Image 1 (tube, rainbow, N blue to C red):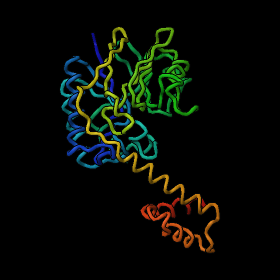
Image 2 (tube, rainbow, N blue to C red; image 1 turned 180 degrees about the horizontal axis):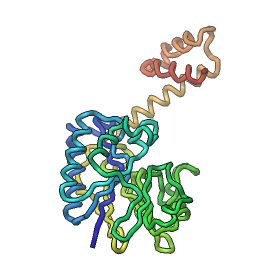
Image 3 (tube, one colour; image 1 turned 180 degrees about the vertical axis):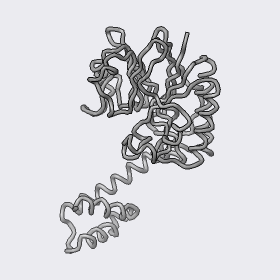
Image 4 (cartoon, rainbow, N blue to C red; image 1 turned 90 degrees about the vertical axis):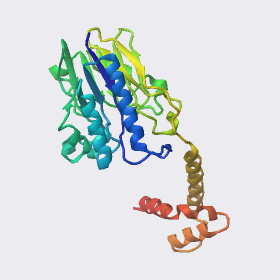
Length: 303
């Protein structure tokens, strides 16, 4: 039996997300990577595939880059690591900018997941947007590996027309299995004909709306194409939601000021003077902290 561990959306970053209160965010991310490594050891996997968005930005801090290189080198001592660049990894989401990115540095030491053979299986993997669905390689593949926003069904898609559903991917692909990153809530979708779409989800919680989510990886049996899920070890996540309340209140104050300005309630011929008068009034005194941003937004609207 040959196994592959499927993971994605690590979003490694030097700066700590707003919802996290970890004392050392870099070490938190290192711990999460080591949890993946431990599962790979327990499952005796032959390869580890990272399906995009290894990094949160195209260029991350030196400390974050060095941490990733060190941990991946440790994983690769006993198995092969292959990586598919994601949209967050590439400047302007353009694969042509690979040499200007942190993922470009990583790929000098680790293989890029591409169109290749895995045992007796044919794999088709190219960065999102570069797929050629008319090519013989795509049509003849058993596994399609991509990085695009894929929801398990229409009910999970917040806005119609955003991303695709798992079934929509299968409708395009004649093969047996689609593996995709970008969607942060991991799932395995099984169609009526038995074909599947597997999305491993994110490595850790970096947004408050994922507070109830348990990060996971997928284990693929290359002999049978069966997929199993391994949840990362449970722990008390250091996540807060206070900033969401403050952000909502701030947006409400800004919206109120903009509404008054738009109604023409100000009397000066100077737009800036009108805004300053409103901000400095007793009613809008709490909005002084958003004054610079208000000006920036309004000026952009007038361009």
